[in-house]
Length: 179
Image 1: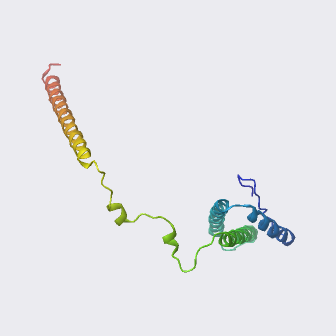
Image 2: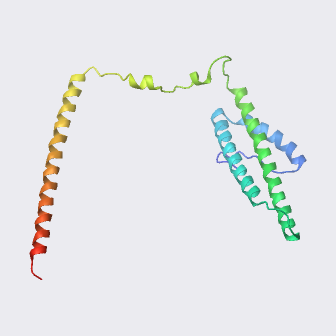
Image 3: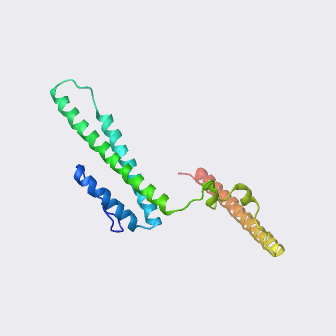
């Protein structure tokens, strides 16, 4: 599978290629920086979800064996299921390699809570908004804009009332008009 950064990880089944792939994967992982590792990990997780979805679709297609034709279909489905399981197994091993390499490169102090390392806003921090020094000018501008909004809303209401009256007049004229 080729990525947009030019790194590739082969996806074969034979054991000889698996050994080669482990050494290739290790060298590829060492060449990547931490951000690329995160992106590779995200793509691998998405691939795992995709393969798992395919696996469940194959499992839904499995039927009870009744005759020779359904036995052939069952063998084909079991091959598809086995291929999907092998693919998922390979993706999990790739994800584990990425995870181990990320943990090796990123030093997280022991005992620290991971949530404290990320700057997350809590509701308490959001409610404590900073008040600008020129709050009175902002308040005056706010009041002015509110007054303009009220006057525009009143104009629109008057226009709607006039249109409604006009529509009633037209309807009355149409009803009274002789055919």
